[in-house]
Amino acid sequence: MAEAVPVRCPACQRENGYISPVFPCACGSPVTPPLDLAAPPLPLTHRTWQDSWVTVRCGACGRESEWPHPEVGCGACGTVVLVPVRPPAAAEPGADPEAGSGAGSMAGPAGPDAAGAEDGVGGDGRPAGRAAGSGGGAAGAGRGPASRPPFRPVTIRTARDAVATAALYLRWLGFRDVRQPDGVPIPSAAVDLRAPGVVAQVDATTAPAGLRAVECVWLNGLTASATSVYFALAGYTEEARGRADDLGIPLFVMDLTGMPQPVNDPADALVGRGA
Image 1 (cartoon, rainbow, N blue to C red):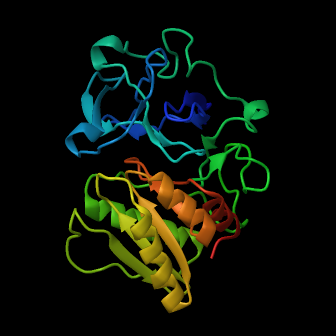
Image 2: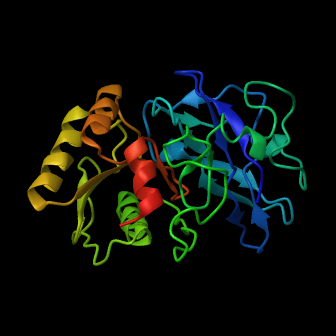
């Protein structure tokens, strides 16, 4: 598995480990977006589907394909950070996609010894190296129950994909009979997912989830005597994160690769224990 590189959050200056995803080219070769380690990472303040994709050239056959733009959720403040990618003209075939043009705030691999200071994303969707007591650990797969296989993400291209991904993740956590709503999700509205013991909200909108949204899912869970969980594509406001911590609501950020990432301690605890 590729090593994590540190990505500094432009909002709080916290370094978060990021492992570049690998996609399958039509020719069968693995393709990894070539990260531009010399360019500063940018906060994602407004998400649009058109701007959420990057063109990546296959080093084996030269084919150019559209893949999700690399991004990482900050484990400290919840900001969603866009990781810069070199355009195809600047990416040489066969070059190491994580070898940048020089040092910078993102330069240098994050090895196992740095796991305590940098947040990488493991195969189970949990950032590695979170502070002691938050359920983190070294980057890798299968940190949950021994019987749980690594989560297999599905690329998110539409709001319906986001709902399906959240449902798959809840099943991976151990919740059974997860029910999805019928019909196509409305892009401007969050979607409920329910299963015995859990009530989840999936927000595929382009704005960070706010305080009211977090409180609503908490009330829904309270009414159903179930765990409340929130999934968002665009992250959360500071007020929402604070309220979720107070209420013990697990918050997850989903990137377009389909890998939910826990962004608070209740989410880490849920990943660790499962359903």
